[in-house]
Amino acid sequence: MRKTILLVVAILCLGLAAAGPAAAQASPVIQDLVIQIWPEYDQPAALVIYDFRVAQESLPATIKIRVPQNGDIFAVAKSTSQGLMNEPYEPPVLEGEYDVLTLNISEAVFYRVEYYAPLERNGIMRLYRLNWPGDYAVGTLQVLVQKAVGARNLQTLPALSELPGPDGFIYAQGEFKDLPAGEAFNLTLQYEKDDERLSAADQPPAAMPGIEQAQGSTMSLTQALPYLAGGLGLILVVGSLFLYWQSGRNRQARREAPRKRHTVATRQPDGQVYCSQCGKRAADSDRFCRDCGARLRRD
Ligand SMILES: [Zn+2]
Image 1 (cartoon, protein in one colour):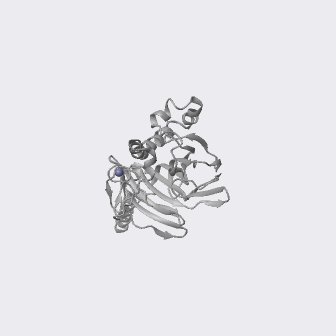
Image 2 (image 1 turned 60 degrees about the vertical axis):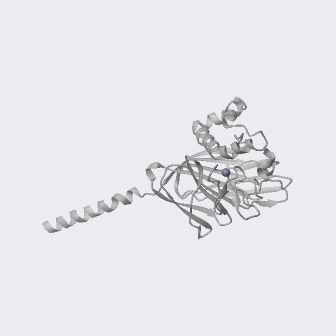
Image 3 (image 1 turned 120 degrees about the horizontal axis):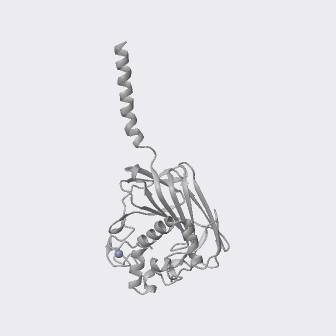
C-alpha cells in the first residue's frame, strides 16, 4: 500500500515537473500588431508590412508568420537602437496556401515582415484582400491603408477612417482590440485609379512634415479628434512606428533633392549594391541599409 502511495506521489511530481515548462510555452501573445498596406507604392502590387511585438511574458517565443502563397516576401527586420536591422531568416516553407516564416523572438521589440502581393485589377478598379490568419492572440491591432497617389473612392471593409499620416500620405486607419488566437483578420480594400503611376515615383503629396508637425500645428482639432478618440495608444504606437521606421528615410530624403531620392539605382553596373540614401555598400541579401536603416530598392 505504502509503495503504491509513493508511486502515485512520484508520478504526480513527475507530472507537475513536466507541466511547469509546458505551461510557460503556452501559445505566445502578440501585444501590438500594426498591419500596413501600401498599394501601388513602389511596385504595381500591394506592399504589406507587418510590425509586431511579442508580449514580454511570452518570451522567448517561436513565431510563425503565415504569408499567403501569392505573396512575395521581401524583408524581415528587427528594430534596434541603431535602427532597422536585417533579421536573418530561413526560407519560408510552403504549408497549404501559405508560405510560413519561422522567427525566433527573444526581445519585446518590433519585428517587421514585408511582402508584395498582387492587386486584383478590373479596368480602373483595384482590389486587395488582406488575410492575417490570426495564429496568435493580439492585444492591439492597428491597420493602416495608404491611399495611392491618384486613387479615388477608397473603400475598406471593415470601414476605416482616412487621416493624414506623418509622411504626407493619407491613411485609412483603424484600431482593433483583443483578437483571440485562431481568429483570422480579413480586410478588403478597393479604389479607382486611372493611371499606372506609382506613389513612390511621385513627389510626396505633402512636404514630408515631421511627426511633431503632423500632431501639432498642421492638424486641426477636427482632424485630431479621431486620434484622440482612438486613445493615446494609436498616437504612441503608430506615431512611434512612423517616426522609427520612416525617420531614416525622411531624414535622408531631406538631405537630398526630393526628385533624386527615387531615381538613384541601388544596384550599380559593377554588380554591387549600394544604399541609395547614404551610399554605403550593402550585402547582397540586405533589404535595409546597415548604416542608416533605409529600405534598399531592388530593381
Ligand atoms: Zn544607408
